[in-house]
Amino acid sequence: MIEEPYRWVEAIANRREYIEGQLAPGSPIAALGYREGILFLTLGQMRQKMFEIYDRIAMGAIGHPGDIERLRMAAIELASTEGFTRSATDVSLRRLVHYSLSPVMKTAFEQVYGPPYLARMLFAEVGNRPEEDLFLRVEYDGELASNGATYARARQDFAVLSGTQQSTELMEAFLKTQHVSDANFETALNCALDAWSIGHMTLQASEAKELPERAAVAKHRQEQLVAAGIEAVLLERDASRAIRYRSLSDTELRPLIHE
Image (cartoon, rainbow, N blue to C red; front, top):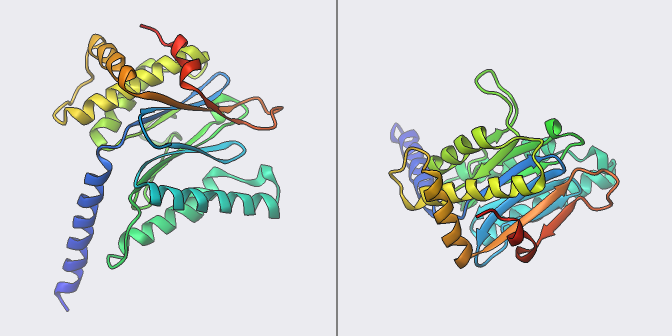
């Protein structure tokens, strides 16, 4: 009996190590609040990584496609039920994640005899003003990280998602100094591309601890744009629009990219 708690802790540690290894290769995602809304951006060659959840809410994710789809459908169903029983304005990202998705993912992770969710997700809810934008990152174990101010840090007008903590931290460090919430779309697009490039470079060089030189970032971005397509979506801030979520094509974005 004495060994049982130790076995559970060991099983959890092994499970965490396994999941981290599975998520590590995932293409990073940058989400930036700007003057006219929120931009989600990543680069890839195959499957979709960004999705509409409900009206003002979008999601980006890395991980196993099956688990991402299960969580996406659960989020859509929860939001739709809330909107139907109350009203569309009552659907809240904070409520959706804190009281529904996070507990489900935590339970799945801690039940060591069942499969966990191989997924890491980033949600955003667009506000009427940039300072009202909400970003929430949900880990595979149910842990949450938001862009809200705390006693230890100021509020952020962006969020990122990547396969490793090191990659995430360097992307955030770059955006803290380079991104501004009142930027126009073109500026936000190029800033998001640079942040993605830094995250992707870090995944390939695991020993990297500092931000790379701007010339190296530009070179890496150019090389990746040749080999991969841009996946980007917008959450429009304009409340008069019937649909806030809009997918952007690779062809309409490329002319806006700075050399």
